[in-house]
Length: 159
Figure 1: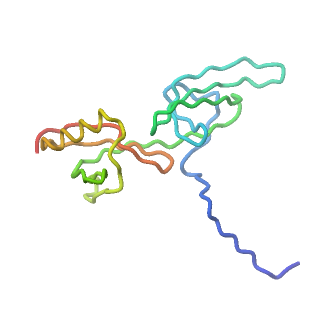
Figure 2 (figure 1 turned 90 degrees about the vertical axis):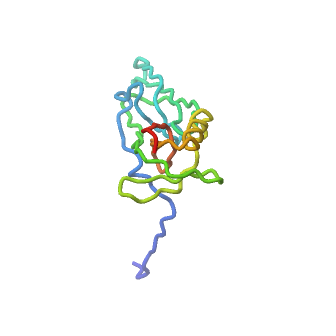
Figure 3 (figure 1 turned 60 degrees about the vertical axis):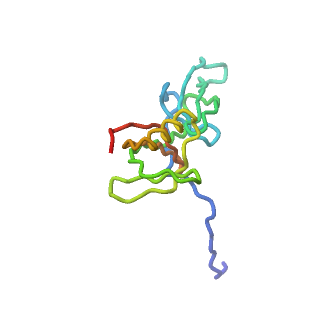
């Protein structure tokens, strides 16, 4: 046997904590699923009957929760699918910078400055108009699989 020590450098992230396995047959409409490496909200599920070779198949149609693209996948119903951990957090809006980033106040009193303005035109105009009018705005940030995006806005009254 060799006396050399082997050093392994891990450059890839396994992503284990970003998703959890769930049996395909138990995933329902309005749930979440990972399709082609993207976190999606399930909008349609159909199950085919078992064929000559045994497995019933689930056909999932999902919409990417960050970019809105429609993705499809077919998985045997007895197999496991990855389901993303999706979290929603509310932050108070402090500032909108010229370079397209927002400054948010966290629950602990710190600031979060690494989020971009939303790509949704309607939400973007509501945020800018409300901020310019001096309203106190609370934004909801959705995070899954290492990505974060502003997905909703609430007005909690004037400052």
